[in-house]
Image (cartoon, rainbow, N blue to C red; front, side, top):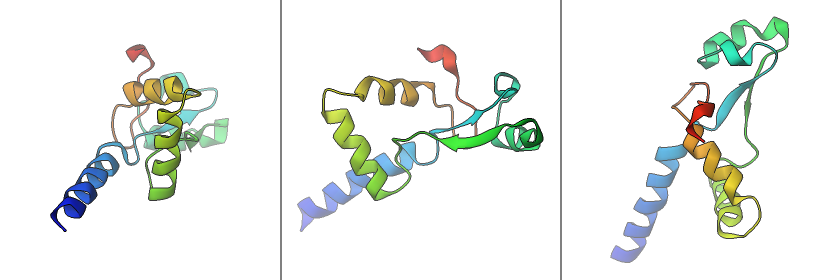
Length: 97
């Protein structure tokens, strides 16, 4: 029982650490955007606030992301996305990699 509780706590820590931070602004003005609000204000210009394919926002996505991380294909992209992430509703910082 104690081991199950510890494992659940570890999984929750991963969710809390990475939940919602893999979003980014995509569009012609994305390089001038620093957060979600600015991105959505410029949506008339074609900007969109989108999430990466592999993220940790829910259990299904987290399990898929962990599977990709544990395999040989695609783990580097997820690693750099995590390094570039700044915080919740913040534009990614591409200078991390």
